[in-house]
Image (cartoon, helix red, strand yellow):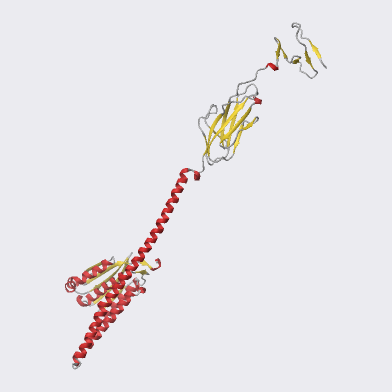
Length: 418
């Protein structure tokens, strides 16, 4: 049903309006499209077809940025984010809140946003915030813009820089350290392998040199001792044949042959002992030296006493060290028998860290009297032998009276170290 109403109190000629039963009494649509509204000062007419388009783009503002629900930035009213938001590697959730200032029709505002370097533009109308999960490390820029109710977009978006820190194993300094460590390990491995190879080659050369020296020493001993003794035996045999008509001369030659033969046997036994690698131990040296001293002092009629530890370390002695120490020991015992005028001899073995010391002590005439009889060459030879093997030689008075000879040398390595 249509009702025609005329407004009283106003000039004639006003257009009539058309109101239906469901229309509001405060405003009705005129036939010409114009809307009329009653006010205290009269009627106000509005023609929707003549309304101007809103060309003002709405300002857009990033309100806050939260990292794991912790606000970033101290000033919530700042217009622009001048500093980048740093997201530590241990954080996972990034939340950005934004809004636009559209006072005429805020409910019709729309937004476009993107995280440059991570996603393309997305559009929303109801949401004023965006959430991001675990982002790959790197530098991003969040941009957001808005439009008004007439679809006019703000050409200048609000922006904020986002910096996601990498975990420490992806940082440049850690990767540089890893590269340096790998290079160092490679260089160290190559150097170690090369050094070990050179050391093995050097050890082989030293072993060959030691073997050559040992062979030369054995040949020299065989020539000097056995050769001279066998030559002497041959000469004595010829003399015995020439003096076969003189029984006394033959008997003297026979005794001399027996003595030379015993000396030759002892020299051969000493050469074999020094050449046998099974005797390259401290225990082998001590046992052989003590046996030699017992046999020699027993024949000379001297009392002797041995002071040796019951347990000796299982250490290996180089052949040249064992040979030189024994020769110096042998020379010392021979000097006691020949020159010391002693009645008793004490032989001791002392272990002092990485060194061992063999002491030959007698109760004879003392160093002065023994030195005048032995001469300087014998003592000089013993001192040189000990120096050649890295040891020391001492010729000193014994407590009370007599002489004490000290032969000190390095023990060497244990057998289980090889």
